[in-house]
Length: 422
Image (tube, rainbow, N blue to C red):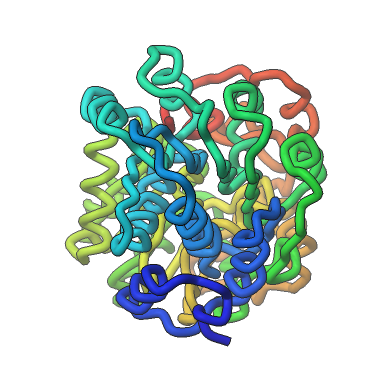
C-alpha cells in the first residue's frame, strides 16, 4: 500500500516523500481514508506508530480543499496535554502543509503569550494548543473557536490523567456543533470511551494494535535491586554499557533533580525535564539530549508523551510507575518506527505489586536479573509506598474518582504538568 492509494493529493504526497516516508504505517492506512471521507474517528495506536501523521495529513488535505475565509479563523484545532507534544504536532503540521498555503500556529503556557497573540491576529487555519493557554486566550478575546471544522483530541487518556476533563468540557462548548471529531490515544479506558460518546458522532473505531501492548522491537528487562542502591546501579549500567543516549524516568520532580545531580557527580552529562522547569530550560535540555551534548535526560511522566526522539536506544525506569499504562507510554519512547530499543526497569521490593500489575497489563513476564553487589534486601517490605508519601504520583485506583466531573486538588509534585503544562 502507498500513501497515494489512501487518497492523499499531490501536495501531501510530495510532503510525505520529503520526510522520507514511502509506506504508510498500519494506523495511517486505517485512519486516513475514513477521515478524508469526513467521518469521526476513535483511534487507538501504540506510541511511535505514526498516529500524528494519521490525523494531520487528512485534516490538512480537507482544510486545504475547503473554502478559505478572508480573515483566516481557526478551522482545525488539535488539543494536546503537554507543551512538548504540542510542539511536536505543530512541527508535523508545518512539514506536511509545506506545499499548501495553510497557516498554522501553536500555543502553550510557560512562555510569553504576546508572540502567540500576534500570530493569531494575522490569521491561523490550524491551531495546536494545550487546554489552559487556549482557554486563557479565548477568555481574553484573542481568538474564537466558532469556525472550527475539525477538532482533534490527541492523547485523550493523558488528558484525563492530568485532570483536564473540566477544561475539555469547557472547550467543547466553544466549538460549533457541526464539525468533524478525531480522538487519538495510545490506550482507551472506560473513562475515555465515555468521553468519546459525548464528543464523537457515529465514529469509525480504528485499532492498529491491541490495547496496552508494548512494541515487539523493545527488549524489556527488570533488575531487582535494593532501594538504596538504585542510583549506583543506574550509573553502573549507563557507564559500563557506554550508553550514549538514555531517557530515565522518575516519579517526582525532586527525584529527577536529585538523580540528575548524582549523575553529574559521576561524570555523566545529564539534564532534568519536568513541570517545575521553565519552558526555556525544558527546550534546552531536550535539544541537548537530541544533539548528543547531554547523554542522560531524567524526566517525570510529563515526558512519557510527546517526546519524539528518533532512534532512542535506551529507556530506564529508575522508578516504575504505579499506573501500569504509564509503563507502556514510557518505554514507547524507544523502539519507534520499527527500530529496536531497550527498556530497563530498576525494581525495589516496595514496587513488587506495581511490577505485577504491569506484567498483567502487557501480557508477558518481563525477564528479571540481579547484579552482584546490588542484591535486593531480603528483609525489605513489599508494601508499596503510599502516593502521598512519594508526593509525585496518583493512587492506583483513583482514575474513576478523578474523572467524575471534578478537578483534582493539586500539590507540588502531584499531577505532573497540571496547569504548568499548558
